[in-house]
Length: 154
Image (cartoon, rainbow, N blue to C red):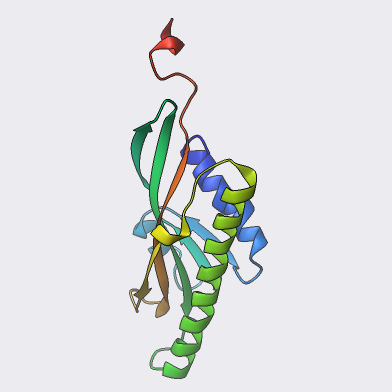
């Protein structure tokens, strides 16, 4: 995982197709999901936030993507039974996303990921869709490039 597009495409092209419960994918800030709410989003949706990036130099230049994803469902207003069921389903999907990330990190050597560093929190009603779910913060570390001592400028 070298750059932002690799990061985005990993979730879009690898994680989402592997988890059949996920019906839609959005990446970006809140404006991208709010602009699609009500009629356009298919639930459950995996919303990948744009990551923060920090740098690691351990002899190889690496990028740490500090990111987050949210798994959401939409329930009718005041249908608490549906909201609870949605929270259960979105927690299961969250678990599957994390398990896929852990499996891929262990087997593909494209990036580093430690599930113990992930943090998941409830995401209550936030928009007109009455969507519910879980938001998970995580770090993925990938190679940045081959040159670290200016040798790519020679």
